[in-house]
Image (cartoon, rainbow, N blue to C red; front, side, top):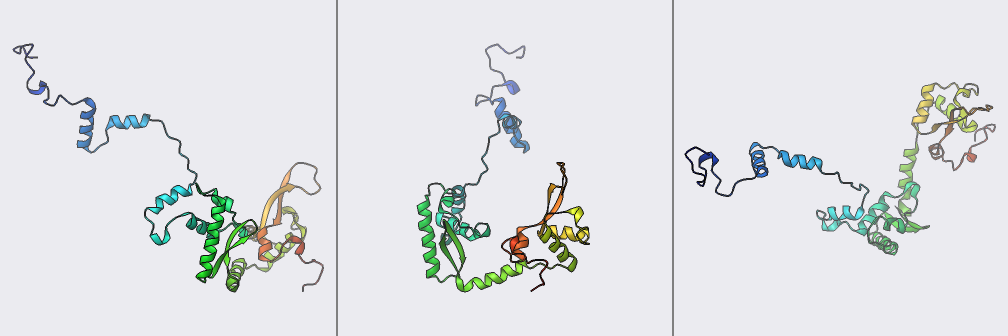
Length: 254
């Protein structure tokens, strides 16, 4: 207040009260931040102090379907039926049947009998459209597979996938392990295997052999040493059901 100003007179100039009743510190800070192109420092501080929310990252097919449904074409609208079709297309390992109960558990508000009805509807549609694949009931679930007249093409593809090129050294090492497994790594040379470590690593990389730690032969201690043994891929490549199907090493080749 200036000396010449009376106590009851309103302030003038810089000290005058704004006509709109004034601006709070918060609003002033926000206006200044907007003018400078920066975030409101007070708002940022409040955000930092807010507790972090715990988010469930598990997949929810219903929510994914609703989100995608907004942009999906009418010809391929995401629904329980199309989700079932996608799951059957991907399938389970080794062609295991996909149970309706398992599918229903992935979608909210859908029961197992409804999944069975949808699978039957898909089967009828594929049959009426003469598709090269079909949906069939198998054991306790459903599978999508090639029709009988097209399975030869799938067999050709699978055979090419199983094909593995191995030189003589790799085949010798593989045969020695197959007939003597599990074989301690240090005993390979004693059994007549002269394959280099690089050859053995190649067989492991290709999934034909694996290294497992087992107790040493004839050793009562608890120390475990690496042993080589064949893998399920070895059986698949050589068309064997089990290791019992291996030919007798003492018999001449047929």
